[in-house]
Amino acid sequence: MKITYESICKKLGFDVEDYEPVVSDHEDDSRVSPFSVLTIEESEFLYDYLKKKRTEKK
Figure 1: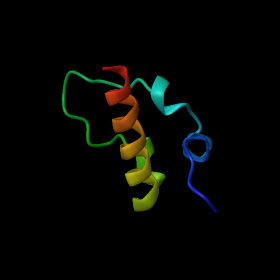
Figure 2: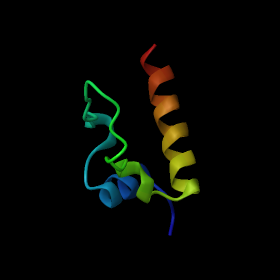
Figure 3: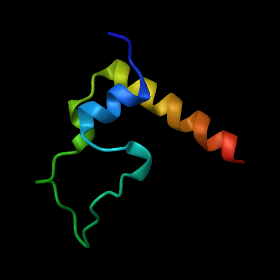
């Protein structure tokens, strides 16, 4: 299966560009990152995708 931005969003259940992390006023190790379900290849793809999008905005 080919990795795409859309396939990653589908796997996560949300649009990554709209993701708002839950922020706490103290360290909370009980929360699992939703991104932990991604494979290394998917994580690298997503990093490169978001990095490219960020540089396009500048």
